[in-house]
Amino acid sequence: MKSLDLSRFYAANADLPFQNRWAVMPLRASMPVPAEKMEANWQLLQQTSLTGNKRLIYIHIPFCDTHCQFCGFYQNLLRKFDTEAYIDALLNEIALEMNNPAIQSAPIHAVYFGGGTPSALPAGQLARVIKLLKQSLPLAPDCEITIEGRITDFDEARTDSYIAAGANRFSIGIQTFDTAIRKKLGRLSAREEIIETFERIALKDSVALVCDLMFGLPGQTTQSWQTDLEIAADLPLDGVDLYALNLLSSTPLAKRVENKQLELPSVAARRDFYLQGADYLYRRGWTQLSNSHWGKTTRERNLYNLLIKQGADFFAFGSGAGGRLDGQSFMLQRDLAEYYAQLQQGKKPLMMLTGQSLLGDWLYQLQAGIERGRVELPALTTQSTLLNPLIEQWQQSGLLVSDDHCFRLTPSGRFWSSNLLQALQQLLLELNNPEHLKLQEKMMQIRKSGQAVHPHATAS
Image (cartoon, rainbow, N blue to C red; front, top):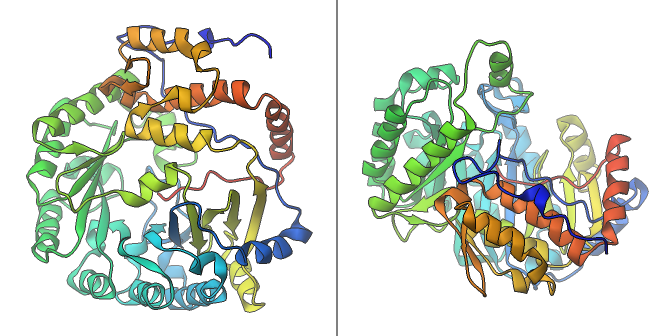
C-alpha cells in the first residue's frame, strides 16, 4: 500500500475546522445485477432466512400536497393521482412477499412511513397498510411504527386512524415555528396552529411525538432560533431533531438563492446555531440520541434511524423506495406507471439490485459510531495506529476527545460529523480494502455512463 495521506483531511483550525460541511458519498462496493438476472436473484433472496441483523420495513408514499421550497424528495402532486389505487397496489406488493422466508424469519423492529408526505393521504388509507403489516408479519411486540408528515395533516380523523391501526410514533416536520420564515419556505401554518396541534395530539398520550426543526434557514437569527428551541422544549414532545438546511441544487429554494432573491446564513453561523441548540437542550435535560436527534422521554427511541446506520436489513415497499437485504441494495420503480405495470404482472417492481457488499462490516460500524458520537477505531481496522496523527490533529482542533480505546465527538465534532465520516471511510477503505479502490473507479465510470447503481437509500 502506498503511504497514507492524512493531511488532506486535517482541520484548518479550532474556530472553523473546515470551509463547509461535506456530503457523505456512499461507498459503491457492490456491482449492479444485470437487468435480465434481477428477477431470479430477487426470488432467491426472498427464499433466504435473514436472521443475522436487526430488521426494518420502509414504506414509501410518493405524494405531496405542495412542493416545499427546500425539499429534494418531491415526486408527485397529490391531487393528480388516485391514492386509493396506490394503496391497493402497495398492499398487493406486500402480499407478494409477506409469506416468504426472508420477511417471516425473524422479528421486525421498526416500520417507517416516509415520502413524499405520508400524512397527506386521506384518513384510513395508511391504516389499511398498518393493519396488514400487523396481521401478516412478525412485528416485534415493541415495534416502532412511525408516520412522517406535516403538521396540517394531523387532524382528528387521520390522527385517530393512525393510532387505532397501531402507529406509535409521529415525526412531524416543522422546520421553524416562525410564521414569516415558514411562508418563505412554502409552509402555511402559523405558530399558534402548530402549538395547538401538538398539544391536541399529546393529550391522547398514545404515541412518541417528535418535532423536526431546521437551522440555516433564510432570515433565521440567533433570537428566532432560540425562540424555536424554547417552544419545542416547552411543548409536550418526546423527541426533537435539529437538522441543518441541506441546499439541493434542484430545489426552488436553491434557485432563489442562486438568483440573489434570498441569502442563507454562513457555515459558521450554521455551526453556531447547532451548538446553541445542543447546549440549550442539554441544559433543559434532554438526552442526545444521535448527532441530530434528542429525546426528552423514554418513549422516544429513534430506533429506525439508528438501526439503519448500523447496517440493519430493511425491506422496502412503494414506488421509489430503496432497501437493503443480506448486504444487497435495491430500489423500486420511481415511475408510477411502471410500478403499477410490474405489479400487475405479479412481479416486484425492481428498478435496481446490487450484489452483496465486498467491504465487510467496518463501514456500518463506523457509520453507527459517528452517529452516536463514539468510535472504536481498533475495532474497525488492524492498522488503526496509522490514523493516530489525524486523530490527534482533530483533537487539537476541538472536534473530539481521544484515549487509547476510542474517541468521542465534541459538540463541534458532531456538527462536522459528515466531514469526519467522509474522511474516515475513505481512509479505512484504503487500509482495509485497497483492492476495492479499483472497483470504486469502475463504479464511477458506470455512473457516468448513466447505468443504475446502488442508491444511498434513506428515509427522509
